[in-house]
Image 1 (spheres, rainbow, N blue to C red):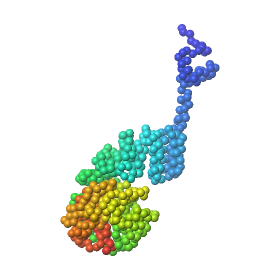
Image 2: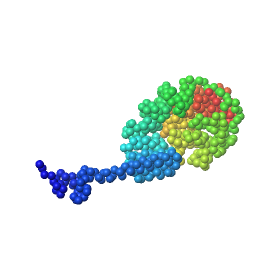
Image 3: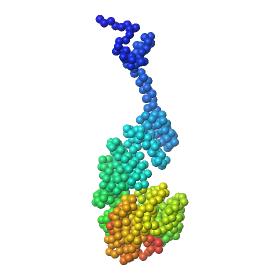
Length: 518
């Protein structure tokens, strides 16, 4: 029978090797630890660290939940401070990327400082790209970069972030929104086929996503740009069927109505008389009209030097008075801008000079928030970016202009007797000679108006045609037309606007009223 070593015997070579790997086990025989199993002794450092790591994770969760509670109670400073403490004390916690997302959303949604959200999103991208939260972080970063773009050529970085969401996180809930945003970027660049593909994929693969109705609406509009009117109308009807209570369904309803009326039915223009019905001599020399994004009519009254909003039959003044206004612009946010020799006047603040443009004939905002101004004495258009910088866009002298859904403008050049449909960079994509598709030509364009579905209305005069109205399609084809004489109108018409039901509103400064054509 083998002899067992007594308590004082040196350990064998196998045990000695284990002890060399675990110095804590090399203790004197007198130590009570000498009877502890070697494996347990080696595990002691890890066992000591585990409670510390657990405590850090518990602390991170408690800090994150505390921030959530404060944020829900609108104690925003407390929430921001708490999440900041989480990032400082437990940067390796799984709650750190969630805190970064929450802080970025706070800057965007509450503080309305999107530039302050970018550092949080940059850190999320750099340090936590492997986490599920990175998908939403990349999406938000792309949205912010797209908002900063002032021209289509500046969308490259934003599109890269949307593509990263698709490539790195194909199962993320951020994918449909990323596809939608990528589609808009492609469309802004004039790549309508690629844009349509992204819009369709956004709602086809994720029909229940919140962005699906928006994707369907934009898909329909893109089909129209591609010349597929039947497909556009089918898509709008499909949207109304799938999401009947959505805001997009309301948009689809009027966009369908005006397209069917102007492009398919094309009934002869008829005079509905004074509008709103029964109101005669109720204005003080109306001279300018514009349609707000919500469908309200903006009216500038020359005798009052003031703009007014007509909403559900009620007339309310807007902002300060502006003597001698030459153009009125309704902004996407619901504001109203007036342009005169004194400059650009928003609803608040002092006038902004417009590079000494003194013969303004029209103004409009493009897709990027830039203000395009036409001047009768300037052989170019002047474009003012939101930061106040300006640049010229080569163009004939324009007598009127109106915005197009593609981000460009339609302008009237009386000297060349042409209507030019410009893209977002100011390059002509369609040129329509005065008198095209009409029985006889005209000489001058007094005013232009447009709607969100691509139709353009022109108030014209001169030549054999005389005074009259034209409604043109997105490519410049005349859809409907009539002379004022044939409509029984004998007033002095100075401006016009397209409404959401396919009607045309004229302002008659001689008779101090509005007239609606149907």
